[in-house]
Length: 295
Figure 1 (cartoon, rainbow, N blue to C red):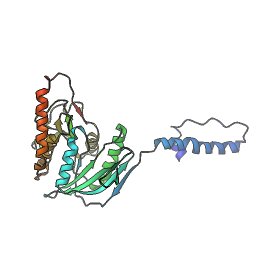
Figure 2: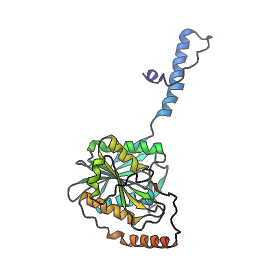
Figure 3: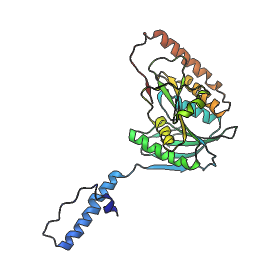
Figure 4: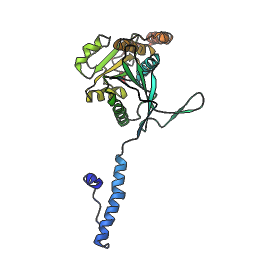
C-alpha cells in the first residue's frame, strides 16, 4: 500500500544490472524501494511533532476561545494574561511543539520551564466558559504558525466552541495618545453586535492585514463556521503598551458582561502616558510614510 500510494510522487529506480538473475532483481528492487526511496520520502513528509499534556480535562459548555500570545506592543498577551489572572483561571494543559523555539526558561529556583503554549480555563460570574491560549512565544516560521495553530484548534474543537477571539496590537509606527480598538470578523453580520462594545470596524483596517496566531485562529474559526473576531488595540509598537491593553480588556469585559478591575494597571498606564506625551513633544511632523504593521 505504501509503495502504491507514493509511486506517482517518487522517481522510478533504475533497472538492476542484468548480471543478477530475474528473481533476484525483483528482490533487490523491492529492498531498494522500501529502504532507500520510500523511507526517505516519508521522512521528509512527516509532520512536525506536537504534544499536549493535560493537568486535567475541564467540563466545558460551548466555551469562548481567547488567543493571547505575544505580538506588537504585547497588547494581546497583556490583556489575556490579566483577564485570566483576574478570573482565577486554572491551567489544564500544556502544548509542546517543534514549531516553538528550542529553549527552556529558568525560574527563581533554577528549575527549567520548557517553552510551550498553555491552555487555561475560567468560568465567569455569569456562567460563561472561557479558554485562554497563553504563552511566551509564537511559532518560529510561517509554516510552523499554521501547523501549531491547526493542532491547538483541533484539540479544542471537541468542546464545541461558541466563539473564537484573538487579541493583538495594531502598530501604527507613531505615538498613540488615545489608543482605539479595532476589529475584524469572520462574517459581516457580526459587526453590528461588536460595534456596541466599542470596537471600530474601518474599511481595510488594519492595513496590511493580520499575521501570526491572531490571524490563524480566526482563519480556522471561519473554516469551521465558528463565530470569530480579532480584537486589536492601537499602539505605536515601540513599547509594551499597557494602556492599549487596558482598552482591550475593557472591551472584553463589555462583551462578556462582567466587571474586571483594571486599577492595578493605573501606575503603568500613567507611565505610558508620560512617555507618549514626551515623545509627541520631541517628534517631528508626521510624514506620509506608512509605518503601520500587525503582529
